[in-house]
Length: 462
Image (cartoon, rainbow, N blue to C red):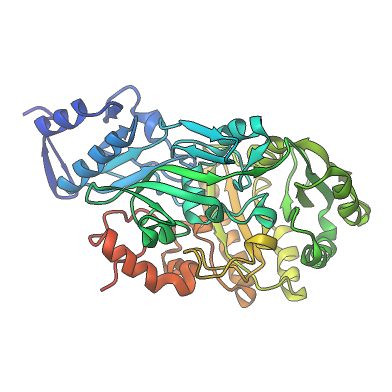
């Protein structure tokens, strides 16, 4: 017996002949420890994790996904599903199991007449926007162009177009899904409606989505975007202005508050804006943002929508250590603002940042039970993203984010699935809110053995 003759993982023994049969049946590539491509293929965006899967199936299409799911299930392997790989808690890769790697699946097709787009799960938003913006179209797609469409969509999808066009899940028309038993289904408003409901906010609990169909909207290609930057010492004033201004902003404007360090600069407070209506009207709408202050720097102006999508990309490079805390606030009370001001001034790493997202406008007007994403009535969604480069600094940077979030607890009221961290298992029920029991029943129907468990996991009912 060679070292590859029999492989044992999670109590399962797999004959080499079975592995070779699996490999031969893939159109894509099977990567194993010792292969030249292995270290790169297992690499995670979040440098906190260094995981070593037994197999990485780099899927070329749906047939490969079905084969990979069946292989993992039949051999008792834990499965991780990797789309864009931008998972803060590192769910994209597992130790000793099978990674179902969807990153090679990057096909996109835009129908400009119907204003729809079909895309595979390996697509990132920078790629999706490149295709849709050729026709002056877009859909809500997060706040960083390097993230994948799959994870963001399945968790809800806050983004720069949320106020005008709703969350990403509100723009999902249909999805093709490979279930834990290897079956293939299409979920939409007319087919497998219960599954379609669960996919829109239920994370990766119900299967591997092999294609997404989205509703598109006229956007750009030029919008009014960018940011206005203020001294960190004015953090309280900036948040109080943001609180009042965001309450009355028109749907065309999505505005976030942020605390960050520009390159080679001290920490600042910023208001980041995306206005997707007529530019002349946007200038008037944003006049109060520009006149509040005075600012250190006014970087608001006409820009390509794709540039707006990539504004924060440089601040979240692959390979850094990341630890995240986040959730929802019913309001930015003066006491909560005091907490923000205290902790952003004390962050131990200049790479760390805080983004206060909003659930306003069209996103807020959807019924809380219409999709699995429940938090439609909580207008503020802060994300505390601790980032550092040296493992020796982990304790103080993780501690800062934990203490910050703990101080915000008196004002918090929910959790965002896409912003859960690696130690937030106790907050999963909070993330799904009043929809949890319905999701647990759905999990029992479509994944009764909890095969898909590397996610914000919902245990099957009963």
